[in-house]
Image (cartoon, rainbow, N blue to C red; front, top):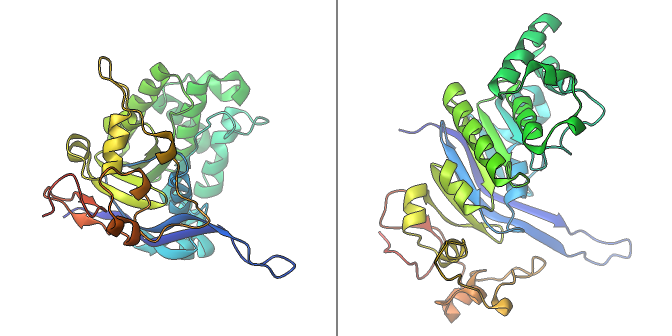
Length: 326
C-alpha cells in the first residue's frame, strides 16, 4: 500500500470579500473551489492547467504560504496549519518551496553562501564548521563550483540561479518539495538540464515532488501521476501515461491538442469560447461547459464530481467523459 505523505481535503480559497466602509458587500474571487488531493511518498505529482486556474494558489497552500478559507491539509498525518502555528520550524524541515522566478527569489544583497546558510542555521541549528561542509555538499549536488558561494544572484544565469533555489530548498533535508513552474522562465536547453537535475536529486535523496506547470511536455517528462486543474477544481487525475494516452475529460483533450506537433495542423479554439468563467460569479454547473463540444443543459446546471474511469486510479469530473466509466 502506498504511503500518503500529503493530503488535502475540500480545499477552498477565496480572495477579497467582506464589506466596504460603507457596508457594501465586496465580491470575492473563488481561486480554489473544493479540491481533494493525495500525494504519495516517492512520487512526482504533476499539476497542470492554464494560467489562472489556481495552480500557484494551491501550491502555496500546500506549504503554508497561503491559508485555506475552508478545508484541511495534512502533512505526514499532521494538520499543516496547526503545525505552522505551533512549530513552523518542524513544518519547514519537512516541506520546502521552489519559486518560479529564480533570480527574484534570491536576495540580491546576499551572497550565495549567505542565502544557503540562512535556512541551515535557522532550521537545523548547525555550527559554522558543519554549515560550511553542508554548503560544499549542496554545491556539489547542483553541479556548481564551490567558488560560486561568494557570488551574488545578479552574477548568475537563470539556470544557475534556479540551481541555487533548489539547493536552498534541499538545505534543510525535507522529504517533500513543491515546485511552482520551476523551469518556465528558462531556455528550453536549460529546462532539460534542470529537469535532469531534479530527477537525479529525487532518486538520490528519496524525495517527493509536487510539480506545478502549464507545460504539458514538461509534466509528462517528469511526473508519475498528473492532476489537471480548471477554474479552481480538479477535472481529471490519474497515472501520467494513462492520462496522456487516453484522456477522459474534454478539457484535457483540448490541452493535448493545443501542443504544437511538427506536421500536425494546430487546432485553434474559437476565441469566444476560450474565456474562463467569471471568478466573481462561478457557474453552478461545469465551468468548462461553454468551451466543451459535448456540453448539454445538464452540464451547465449540475457540477460533475470526480468518478472512476475504466483504468485504475484514473478519475475525471465529466458527465460525458471520453473514456468509459468503470
